[in-house]
Amino acid sequence: MIASQQPILLALVALVLSFGVGTIVFSRRASRDRASLPDSPVVDDVTATAVAVPTETDLEVVVETQPDVADAEQGPNLKTSIGRARSLFATAFSGIRSRSSIDESTWEELEDTLIRADVGVHLAQALLAPLRERVREKSITTPDMLIDALRVAMKQQLSGADRSLRIDTAVSPSVWLFVGVNGVGKTTTIGKVGAAKTAQGLKVLMAAGDTFRAAAAEQLQTWAERAGAEFVRGSEGGDPASVIFDGIQSAAARGCDLVLGDTAGRLQNKSNLMDELRKVRRVADKASGSVTEVLLVIDATTGQNGLVQAREFAAATDVTGVVLTKLDGSAKGGIIFAIETELGIPVKLVGLGETARDLVPFVAAEFVDALLD
Ligand SMILES: Nc1nc2c(ncn2[C@@H]2O[C@H](COP(=O)(O)OP(=O)(O)OP(=O)(O)O)[C@@H](O)[C@H]2O)c(=O)[nH]1
Ligand SMILES: [Mg+2]
Image (cartoon, rainbow, N blue to C red; front, side, top):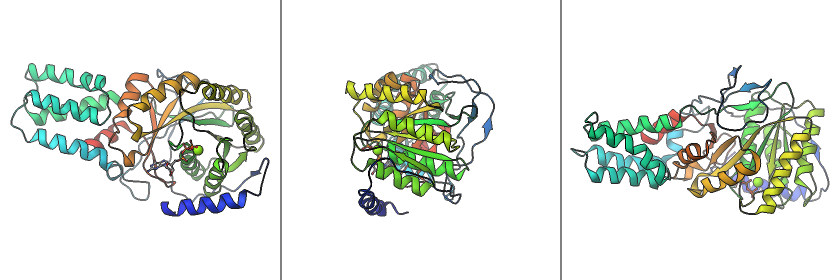
């Protein structure tokens, strides 16, 4: 669907559904013809990370890796999508490469570029310090060598993180909760993930835990219909924890593999709303499924504030991964480095647009290459 048609469709669906109250549950057969994330290889063991993960015993892990980002059939082209972030680096780096030597202004320009990309002052300096040392030792002697070495350092910085998205086959359904501040793309991401997972043959249920915003449930329902996923909602203003609980129970009864739980957007400094999120998590843990992912959705255009959000949400809900959305409209992809390095939370998915296919697994080396090539 063309992105510009979505608001019209959403408005129509909202109009139709505004006549309905109470709980609506419906199911649709999984449609296999949707564009999706690439098939995921199944692996047997879980690599330990610094990130807290609910239950690791008996987990069969489905890992989202290695998307063919250049293939138009598979999904968006990463290089094209992150054009704004790329041009920030391209301008600075081509200027540096064209110089005859490395001097103090070279370092200033590199640091400035990293900071403008939102890598953060601390990390920018940490990335450059070992390179300064190598220039001093004369193992790096030209601007070209320096830029190449920076690329390697940036890849290393992101290497080793466990980016798998866990499906627990022992305790079904697995539950992925989506949390984050207002308007970052939680509901849209659920729609995208749902489309990808139903296309891979999983039976998915979307639970409308955003009972706060008018039309939030209708928005999710539209995505569920499109994805061929089941859908559970509660009454407006109702308890989000009970909707998620009911969703998990309903998914268990219907033999679903995966519950995608939406939550209302909330500012990380509103303690009552963060308490509500804690309750959602607690109650979800009591239902007859297994919460295997709590995915914090962060808008890439937010910049360094994303780090503050990540810190607070992680404290409230044991976040297992980040979905970085709207990277298509941002020059600030560097926040990925800050989140992973400072908080140890792996970025698992990246949003590159508004349609169902505009979501790709985060593959660090490909990302750095796309950013710097
Ligand atoms: N360009 C772009 N837009 C996106 C992306 N992800 C989401 N959006 C848009 O961001 C807007 C907000 O998305 P939602 O999914 O409603 O965000 P939300 O976090 O659920 O919002 P609340 O429920 O109000 O907190 C919509 O217009 C989406 O189409 C992305 O990766 N790229
Ligand atoms: Mg939403």
